[in-house]
Image (cartoon, one colour):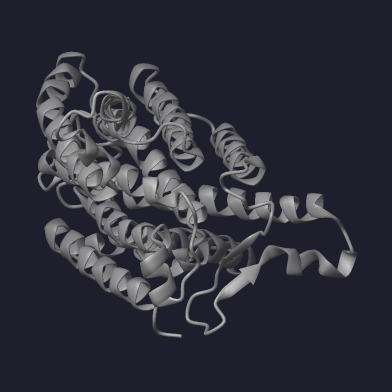
Length: 384
């Protein structure tokens, strides 16, 4: 809203300083600063409110070191993150931009699904929360909205060419239409392929972030690292000069996403102020589902979704560890009469915790791996 207000004041009254708001770099820096202020300032007040309402974490005793000490720690702190993302975005971004609109939609809707899950756990005393089928149904519904917004919007221009970036290849553009060429189908078939891709990516990454949120600061710090990388990719993709120099796909009007992702980074870092070990508040599904969905949708919007396996490698390995553990346990139980495990416990971070590694060290090492993966992702712009 401030963006539109100052744009009007600059055009009509030519007031000094109003022109600053046309620069993405200025608005991005302001958005990050504001999100930090909101998350840190609002955080303490919200933690106090959550404690007063006795909205504490419901902890199951899984035999992990220090686990039961977390019982009663305020949860649903994802509301802090969502507030710190949405407020700067609404104030400083161009709200007529389809990419910004899409990010706001996915933030609100996935945050709402996570909030319902947390509400059932906390207030209904149901440790399982929202039934898995309803959670997946909600994720699929949000994904369908995202895919439709990007496909049918003239701004996004995806329907005019469903092309994305193929990392590490010299001719690094991949057209989804190639997958249905054999069927001699029309644009509707390409849209179906695009829809399936969006549903798979958004659901997988949001669940991956949810699984990673099992240690103090783990999901928050990892998301911040990924956010910084996405900011670089978005700025490059939305700038004709850098896109031409690096030989990457130029995406008109996607530069506005830098403001959103700057707020995202600030919100994660600000929340880490309270979520770092030992955590004063947990984000709950309210935050983790939204963070994963935001990352997935953002990557899709800037046509970098095929980089997600590298960029979101931490989320991927957490997901895979659970899938492998469950699959192997069921297979061995059926074949040998007793279930066997690959890891001491899944997701993967609990495996190291079971081995006696301190929680803070596990988190720090996962962050380091996340930074290395981020560097590989940025390097993929030139290494082909």
